[in-house]
Image (cartoon, rainbow, N blue to C red; front, top):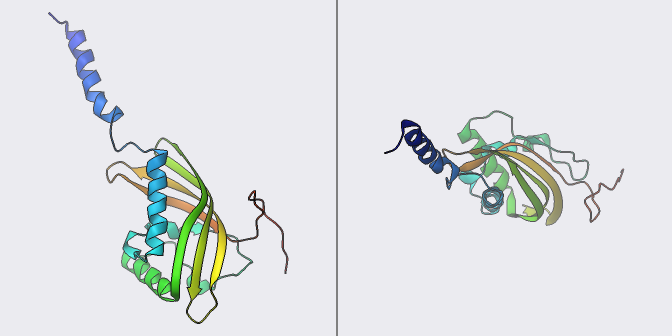
Length: 171
């Protein structure tokens, strides 16, 4: 015959198992897959799949600066954001972005990504360009939707050496 304490321990253990073994627990692999999917969404011009938080970021760009018309306001409605992204992508004859070298790390439900990605694009009526972009981002994992959401990102295309160190170039 089991004691009430023994039954309590069994119930407690069973009730915690689904949480401990959940398929929706965040992993570095799930973060990497989410980031890779984000880059693919840009390349395939799927504005509905581009993380709304991606535009919440900052960067340092004296090389090839973009006009202030290219900046997304910090807080905009979803339909306006998608319209902005579609308008920006429509300026391109082609646009492709992909990971060159990225590192991923998570702590609980917070993830970090840092490294380099490549952007290859051609604006209509302009010569083709290829830039190596140093980038980093912080993500928050939402277990209910089983998705990573961008909290803040940083991107810049200054000149870097092969180890990622900034190479000063003043015009």
